[in-house]
Image (tube, rainbow, N blue to C red; front, side, top):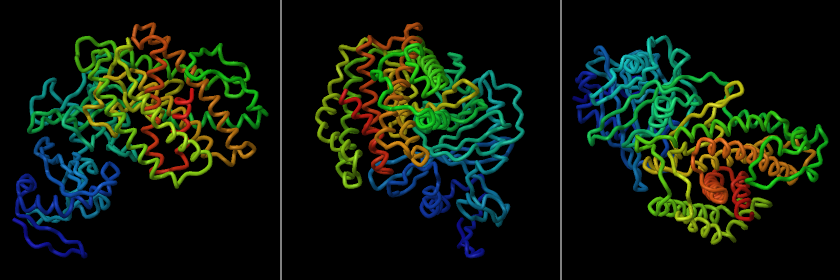
Length: 543
């Protein structure tokens, strides 16, 4: 039963006679909670991905108890419906607290339950909740057949809860660090299927013993009312590290560009190399080594080796159908072309609507892009699977320098959720492994231009044109060294990437797809950076 809200320091408190365990069966509470309260809370959360759209209403798809020894929390699966005629699902665990000093920023609703005043909060803020979740995974049975299924790997033994904290700011998930040794990721945006991050992490570390990804330790999956497995959380080992490869690369590149002035390097006389040419260290001219340093290229070799090893592990499965390699076929081609033509049209519209924001070199590249739109569209529709001999495998799907940790002189690959804009089904489609390579190449390209854009004062003796020229030269050598190592490693392990011409075709195709994808983001958020994907597109269509 709902009583009239009582004013408490101008904050209304809603009074219910039900116990906490029965509260979600109360229609009045649900109506109040879903219609009046949740929208205001959700739109402020970093993990909410619908900020650009307008919420029509929020429904409770289902809820379940997260409990142990009489201690009860609720996990809510919320369906957020938007006026733009689509919906998303989110996971929100809730707790009831009575301490006036607790979680002032994360209160969802002031409430009185059986005359006990308190607040409903996001349960991840509560140490007791975090401890309970840890213990449920650490003590999970080998086979859990209940609605909320806790799982632990054989390597997660003798774990006793000591401490927990938030890992830091994230966009789409909430990560907790336990005992400074383990990381539990709560997935906030969820899908009616196992999350690819859970599937890939478990497969790579349990079945393939791939060492350069955090070990899978456990998970929580929910069996929904429709019998779908929904991944709620993933537990992995914490890899001590010196930061991600994006920051590492920015530091390295800053030194490389400073060297132009300090070593008095003439950019116009730097020897060039062909784009997509496979190189070894011995192929790099002394002038380039003198400018960029040997260390950068040996690190790129190591990263290429780890990327190849990841793909070799993903391409070596012959039992589990979700991971067995596939050939190219007509169904894949139809799926690919439909997806890319739709995305390309969307980006064309964005460019045409944002042309007035551009000037100089960026405007020139954008106009070149528009003048060649039929050529680009044709490149997408020219995908002829009958000429391709390579294999398709499960891939990372959103592979870039920010998804890679640096530890000593090595690299660790994380976050296998896939491309944020894609549906869960699309994220699980088997792709050419070179799709990941293309993602990383675009990331190298971004790192080079970000270094130029973010340090203009440090490089002020050089014109932007000279910096771009030096950047493109360096990009060709970085990608050449990567390809040389990657192709050799995969060939030695009999991962079938196809013949040489096919590899270059697929790589260019995936690079074009990735650059077109990036273009929409840049034009909407920072138009001056649109030069990066536009230059990438120009490299592909003009070579």
